[in-house]
Length: 313
Image (cartoon, rainbow, N blue to C red; front, side, top):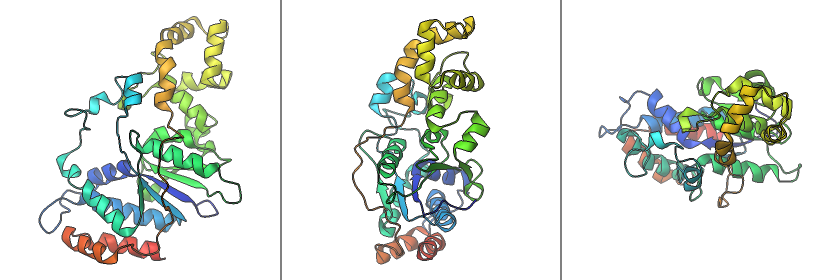
């Protein structure tokens, strides 16, 4: 599918992409000293393909400064609890952990903005940068395209802004371009905001979010169609709306403690303390000598060349 016009601001959910690269590129891809570099190579190749296909005017590698923020854990202690390894560290394969500093160095040498925020996830960085971009005057606003394998970010979809998600479930070469029509087709919800409400009701076991027991995706979408929003649904519940079945009333009532805190966990922050950064797409590497040295040390020459060529076109 052709990119939006004018050229977009491309926001990368970086961890989502390098995890996908790590598990998708053979671990036989190694540096001259035998160190695995499959995640680095895969991320660079993905970025080159994205730059070539989407022709962005801006590019930001959004970063998890905190993969399990305290404010979310305080609200719902089970949030991502099953992914905790030791202490409060995320369970990440050693062969991937060793590659993350290399990714940081290579992005710096390219001059690609890498942005995080203390105490927040990359999702929140993406939400905040999206909010800032869509708040600009219409004549200065760039379309936003979010690249991720995480459905949570579907909540940002907004045709009027415009914001859409490039979902990587089928791979970078076959992106699922998620706009409001796609949300309606796939999830029977009309907007990104409605998707967030549906996701709150449904829950997400992969993030340790229980949802409302007995309220699945289809029922959640039906209730949101009827009442417009989660807030509207809860108002109807409090008023004793007879259109709610006895089972729905019971399940929602039992789920009220969860629903009191879950929206703040599910919804991405739009006001995280994200520092200003130059998000302009570089046309050439910021530090060519350093980039050449990194490429030689880690056996990345072909992937670095592909991204250099993509940026220069």
